[in-house]
Length: 431
Image 1 (cartoon, rainbow, N blue to C red):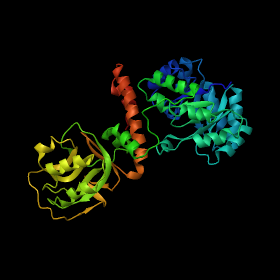
Image 2 (cartoon, rainbow, N blue to C red; image 1 turned 90 degrees about the vertical axis):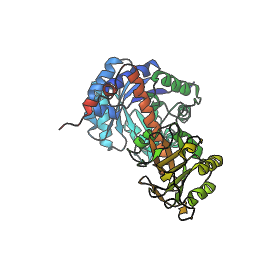
Image 3 (cartoon, one colour; image 1 turned 30 degrees about the vertical axis):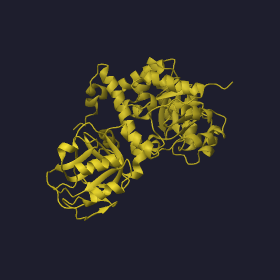
């Protein structure tokens, strides 16, 4: 009978009090091992390893040191602090690995080699096995995960070449836990799918069930996208989430919702028009596909190029919305039509349909370059643009932002405050 794999929960938060609380809930939910993640260790030092061991003495503790040099020193330091397993990078020199193994043996600890960044993972895994390490980890880093990369094929390749236990890490959740288990993983390392959940114990139980019963348990996370999956993903997050995911970028400056309470998500069909000339914006409705967002660059002109008849036409066509870096009119009627409209100005006056401009080229809207096919997301906070080639990555990062905020929100509702939860004073810049 095949032994059930180990669930290792990676605590990659920055503050001690949050790590200890999440660890408590994860253990309640059935976590087998706890991991002091690299960001946590860099933030809190060896003291967090000591405190985790003190509070959970019966739970095996992993210190993800990501050691690249002085293997003996760092292994001793972690083991003396209470770590049962110490992580060393597979790209390290063989002598570093040998020293780490010798040091770990002296303190009754074990070494896990993280293959992050290793190009020929099966070959390297075989070498480090011969050096005496105890585990290898096939790891897709967080930044790689955001582009949709997963560890499945590399895991199968490594597991088939070695006899020691193989761990796997990188974006694993209740939908993928069974798959990586069947591919040969003995240790399933889960971070965000547990630590960002408002209900950590429940999330832990769900992943344990998926691992043990070898079944897929659906989650709201999106990792592989087609157009409709991306649309659904962006519909789940706010423009603020997307801006954070883009490092506070992507915003169309000065463009605001004409009416509140609407969410707009779609691919851009771009239009350039001149002040008051509404011919090309109206022609754009016919050229657009259902679900598109019409993005109209009028260079901030104050005569309207959009109104009630255009909005009704766009609604019937099935457009997701319209953005005008210029003016719209018929506001009383636009407020009654079920179509999101974002604009810089409103005006009662329009010009004539002369037909100057173009459809489908690169435009500037709110100071932001927009190309046909870029993703446009709008809500009451404003409008953001996501370059089409970055859609999958930014959708993943925006979901990640939202999940982290959900966890913080839950901690605030327990009686904390935002400042205390995030330990803001601790992180204030000195001097």
